[in-house]
Amino acid sequence: MTMAAPERESDVVADDSMGSSVENAFDALSAAAPEGWRVELIEGEIHVVPPANGEHEEIVSEVSGQVRDHRKELGRYTGLGLYVPDASPTGKVVPDLVIAPKGSFGDAAEYHDPAPVLLVGEVTSPSTGRQDRGPKLRGYARAGIPCYLLIDREAEEAVVYSEPSDGAYTRSAEAKLSKVVELPEPLGFELDTGQF
Image (spheres, rainbow, N blue to C red):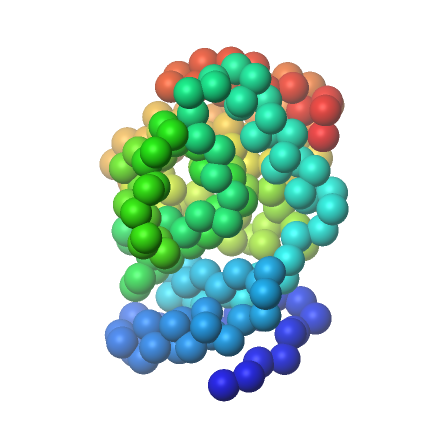
């Protein structure tokens, strides 16, 4: 099967009654996606996401570098698949950045249990912002991931969601890009968004 690279993210909507056919479609699209493209299944919708632009990658790199500067014992992972229960029938997502203790993902799995994850980060783009602000926010909270960092380029702000309880984050802090925002424990340092 060959697949032409679309010009923008495309959504294939499927309802939960489709069961294994959604999984089959997801697997087929994942296998056929051009190099650099990501395929995610979020709340029953298959999303084919184009490679990130330079600005997006600079932000991910800067956040990763600041984590390294403050917490050298933590691993910083990009392109890592997570199995996030309740986000969709399969729960398969690929966050922009995952922070977890080094060695947490040493197996050959394509999608990993989010249990060791301390922080998941997303940087919005016009094609992903809706998922980053909605389904992924809910899915990460339901999975009990302690901290979700959303760099919302359209709103020009960084939002830190924390303290997941009963499937939702109970705290959030936001700062305009160029300001400092506190990453709560288990990270426990200030992120300088002025470096983005």
